[in-house]
Length: 367
Ligand code: THG
Image (cartoon, rainbow, N blue to C red; front, top):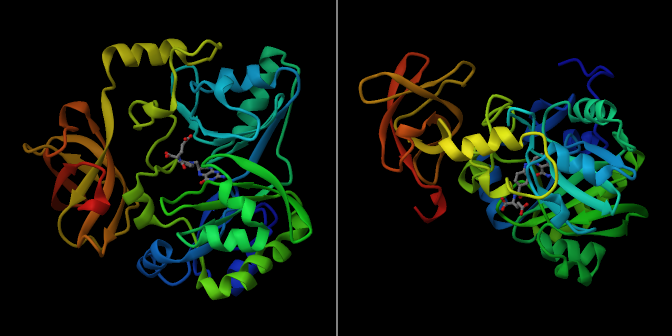
């Protein structure tokens, strides 16, 4: 890949590459390191120790001004009046049809100031368009902010040592203002794994190496290693990836995000009618967990169709990985609701190879 200026640099990119990042994806026009040694090795380490992740590609879209709350409420079906200053909410953004535009974590920085910490789609353009169209009194822009994640069961000890003992009291999905490595950051208890940890929002991209280095040095005695959002871990934890497991073609009910919406919230929001209709009729499709039998060597570059017992296509696999611990393939798929019940026997057409598959519940780790 040619690293042109169109591929925006991460402030942590140099450290990630020096430390052996070996496979990357594109995310918000940035490169996201995904593998250092292998998914398996990094999965085992993440579940026992602590890792440092370059997730600068989770860009921020700032909304600030007198109409900021009105605008945030308009674009999400989650009730954002319940988000206090200093708190975060995971909140799908939906268009007028209920289609998911993105699924950011929303941070409330002040009564009239928010960051949308976005997944991979052009939220800045969408939100600027909505604000302009409605004549709202707000400013919408991408600030110089880059998240660095510290994830894993030893993250609390490492962050307490680097930042202070008070960080142990930060509640899940809350954040504080801190100075780390001489630079102001927001420190949130959050992150894209089920192993616990923090995300540090760096507000000056020239300080990437300094921020990485203080955690790197203090982390050595905690067996800190570089890592990344891990495909095995995130499927087991049930974290869905925008663009993969859901797109603008899906509404939050289909994508299994109904926990994160409040369709009868007070504020005006643009997908109210569409989602009320889905709530009435029930979603036509559902995202499910799937076990797929047999070894799957192929990379999923085309649609892997899910078939019913008669061989009729009833959905698609959206993510899959070999779980060494479970000795099988674990996957997400979007299937017709009539075939979404736990225990349903299905099959998967993986580029012509037919594999048996079963819908199952999400409790992978207790399996
Ligand atoms: N960190 C930051 N920004 C991000 C992500 C991240 N933006 C894109 C993407 N990841 C957003 N996706 C998720 C999905 C789920 C969670 C976090 C980010 C998550 N959910 C909790 C849960 O489901 O239990 C809590 C949800 C809540 O209470 O609101 O952690 O990883 N900065």
